[in-house]
Length: 163
Image (cartoon, rainbow, N blue to C red; front, side, top):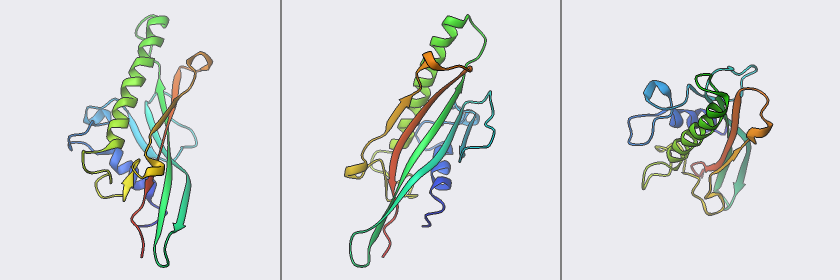
């Protein structure tokens, strides 16, 4: 495994469908228009999107010939607010829709019962004792100036150990 490709591996997992976990992409029945690696220079303004970023990695040697690489993932979520109902109803409904979409995302990140490797892409994801958490932060909707709700989801993944 390369330390240059964890974003690509994680995007592939999040785009997966048909494995008993929630599909995230609309093309497979999910709520998101796009799941892509890295932040684009100009994100699409009317798409619900997940952008996978890797803000940090730690390459720790824990024995003479063994090391373990840990990646911190930060997913930036954009959720556009439509214009099909009254402003008050719409704003509340879209916040709830984002909550539902984030719940599906967290279910996919948790993975299958007994498989916390994202289909063998990593040693473990959101599982190691010091990394056993998934955190979602939602932007304060009162402070949103554009018709776009935002959230961030963060978690860590350990890579296959190298000898």
